[in-house]
Structure formats: C-alpha cells, structure tokens
Figure 1 (cartoon, rainbow, N blue to C red):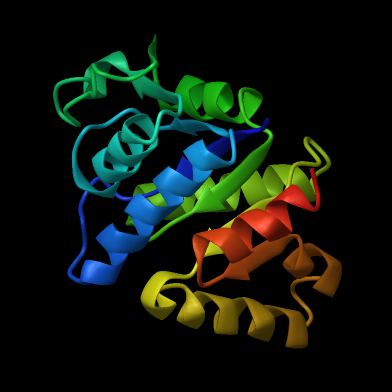
Figure 2 (cartoon, rainbow, N blue to C red):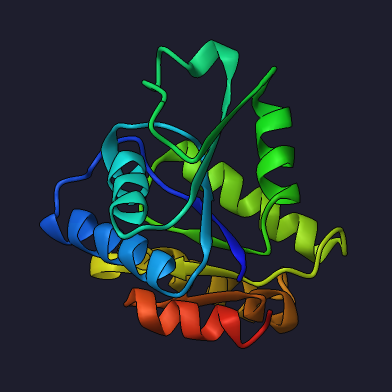
Length: 180
C-alpha cells in the first residue's frame, strides 16, 4: 500500500484527544497496510504514533538529522531509521519516500513542514494528497484563516482545496486514499 508521511509534535500537547487519536491513526495505518514515514523521534506524539504502528504490526520509517538524534531522542526500535545530514535533507527524504502527507497537532516544525510540502504541491513539484487530522479542532483556526486568504484574493480556491481535513483518522485516510 502507500507510504504516508506524518508531520506531528515531539510533545504530547495538553488534550488527551491528541494522544488518543494519534494512537488510533497509527493502528489504522498499520491495519490498512500503509507504512509510516515520520521524523524518527520516540517522544511526544511522534513516539506515540510510531509505537502504535509497530504494535499493530505495521512498518515505521524515521528520518532524522544526525544533530537531532540525541536531542529528539531517536526511536531505535523502528523498522528503519534513516540518518541524514541536515533538516533540508530530512524533509526531502521524507517527501521522496511518501505517497501522501498528513499533519497532526504540533508546533513550528510541524507547521513549517506542512506549509513547505503544500507549497511544493502548489508549485507542481509533486501531486501527492495532503491532509490535516483536525484533532479536537486544533486546526480549525488555521482553516478559517486559510479560507479568509481565499476570500481576500491571496490564495486560489483550488490551492486551498489541495489541503484536505477531517476530524478522524478513518475519514482522513478515506479522503487521501481516494486521491492515491
């Protein structure tokens, strides 16, 4: 099946729903035969996702730059841990090894990865589906803002429509799989 790149936090956040739906996504990816591609950490939501995939019998591939292996506490129990030289190589490696992209709650690193891959899609550098798992309405303010950029004429509605969103793993994976 597909390799799904997931961008998400190295922290767990303060809502139990973040952890619960992250674990559900991991199990669902494995059950549907998808391989996880992610940043390679064993902490926060990143670790929860990888562990859930592995515990459900799936494959998890982590990609981490050497300078973050200790800082982000690399997950050495993955199906594969790819060590790269820098953040640019990390993002390029993750993108090259993915058929689709999902963003879960996270911080500035998650946002940066999401917007970069969305921009690459806009520029025609890939035609892979992308979506937000809108756990506990985490992304609702962003979605409202993005819709506002369309109404103000700074973002084409076709570009906005490239970014799917759903509140549950099954709904989001259904939407992504329909575009694979």
